[in-house]
Picture 1 (cartoon, one colour):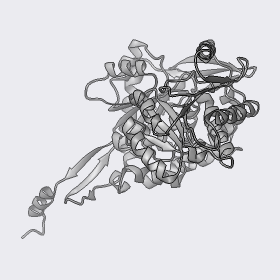
Picture 2: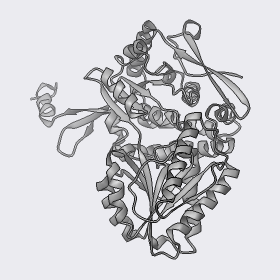
Picture 3: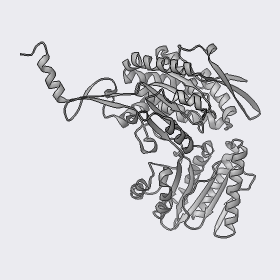
Picture 4: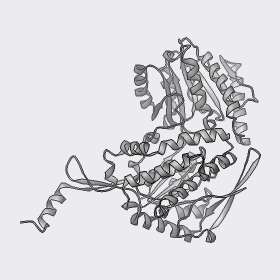
Length: 483
């Protein structure tokens, strides 16, 4: 099979662009994906085109109109009878290797984040008055202000989770920025499909978007691309992000999102026989979802002793659920590097089990592994691919010191505790570096408008122009009705 990916506006004909082929094989099927790879002259032409059309058209649309267009595109992708949704369900398993049912459910849950009510909440999170993006609005301290998005926003996407590019694409649209996105090699399909849908709904909006590809690290291509945008939003490994930052002009705003670690905390108050099994199911679901590929997936759980269910029993419950989920949602086939990483992780844990009180659940042939440690152990990354460590602590607050050593990498924490415990823990987790606290079962589904890595999603993209009260007062002198 063959699929053409990416999206080009009208300034470039597909026939004049060089196309590179990315090949994928999973589940006994093969897919070749052609992606657009532009030369320096085309890069310059495309960038100017996007800037001009964003200024001439996108900035004239109201935020409400943009939200309505996005909502319509999302509605079509949520419709399982729509051709692009059918194509997504058919081709994404071949490209990513993920189970088809996991893709289906994951897409639906993810896309629901971008419906009109959620987009309004998204805007309200960052703007007390979203009309600041449409026109000058009065400020409490006098005068007026308006928010302007960049003329050209570049997205450099990672492909660890299907559909991830939609998040930043939609952010760019909401602030009325012309956007060019670099396709991730691991999942080069969804971004282009979404741009196509937007163009079907509003052809002029399609002239403000482009979805392209270049090989990461190719000096000539990156040199030309990285001189074009006003703002760069990039996802990926820390080394790759550092290389991008090094090449950017000092005047270009850089918004990086690198590797993160997420955890879970379970207080003894949540470990009764009625709640424990359900909680283990939710924790196992968070581990299973996209095989821990997301930054928000749990890699370690800290479980408080003294509940009706012991930390070891809780770990056994999770192992049981992962065994069941492996049948319902099989793990994707791992690369050789990933296989070696999981094997090395298991080997280390098996050796350590001979030295201290830890138990390893799951066989080497299983597609999951759970280790329970009967004693304090600092947070460390797992091998991913459904590998989890459960650490017993005497008091749930003891986990904070074990977590805080990874402060610069922390992101999400799932907490199971009483309301009082939740807020006490939340304050300490925030100080330790956690930026998002959620319930088990929701770790891989951030709420609309969440502050990614503790930052503002839309405010980071805009600049404000303020009309001070003195300028307004002075203008009155020159009005035709002035005395």
